[in-house]
Image (cartoon, rainbow over all chains, first blue to last red; front, side):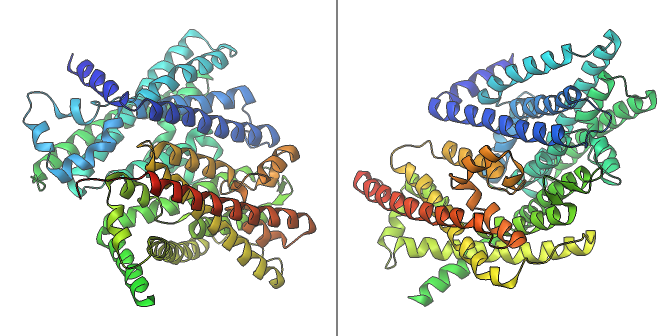
Length: 254
Length: 264
């Protein structure tokens, strides 16, 4: 109920600037369109994808886009967290009788991302329908997709914690987004040690590549277990870090 | 006069160093961006020695040099003007005994000095770390032309950025147009890939826009030298500088007539 109220308020605030919403939304389509053309061009003219077909490569690309955009849509408020910290207004969030994540993590959904999610999901569905995946592989894809979203949530909680400890939010978020762009093509394409780094240390591979590998029937049972292990372990770590950071919060701005 | 500009330069540098963690993370982000593109291309070259007419060595050299060009051309503080216009703070600069454009250029140069200084060190460290095979400068006679291309690129970037900031005279929606510009630059300026790997009609169409002259053109001169087919693009780049200069000048004049502020 509170999430709904925050979301409605966020949408109302965004709609105060309708021209901005339209321009931002169009630009996001242009960005994805241009990047899509580049990836398509690169993959169709080279042998970089190895055993993957072009259709499969596009599913990797679209899955990356959908997860990335869902993260932007749900966690947009994180980008405004620094202002709350340096102004001291975070105090007013902490004294409210609800979990602060409701406000600082998911309290500002982004309309321009919501508009883009639907076509991305439809296009992904179209390319997925061209595969002959079994119902089990499809189910595994959805479960690992949700697992990827859990990892995304973990990352944003870590950013919030770092925001309290250092007042630095923007650059950390953008570094993560830049790195996650590497998952627009399968992580397995990269040479070692980058591949392992992106799979296990900054696990964008688990977030974005592993679900598609499950869909294509390429994922081993140990890798599935490792994926869940890293996500759950990471999530617990992020909550511990958040609690530690809260202990350090000094309300410096107020 | 020079002393005043020098002080503005020094203060701008000091402002950067004030927020040290933010500064360090900003540099980390720049390094990461280069590393990401580097690994993408080295992975692409795993299966083939030459792609799109570029050997691996030439492509890596292009990516390295375009990274440096990006730091020189696209760094700047002109975007701050939009915020100053919206908040009315620009009046403080208009009242100072120094032209607002001299002030902006001094800050722009400070920003470029920091960016270029750090970019050179970072690229040097990355070369030491990855030890990639690089191709040397095509020929030393090209150097003056690279310098000219860089001046033209800085001009295009500066005037576009000014025009985008001057939008604030009429509307509060200043960040969306800048976001559009940033997206177009990131994909079409050549910082991600050389423009001439695209199909010929697309390459020609892009060369009619200002974007390839920001990064691709100076970097291409570095690896290919001044080939006859690059002379026309050279002319086009300076035409863009002229067009954008007059656009910025006229928009500024119109904006100043339209501008009013209160509460200060």
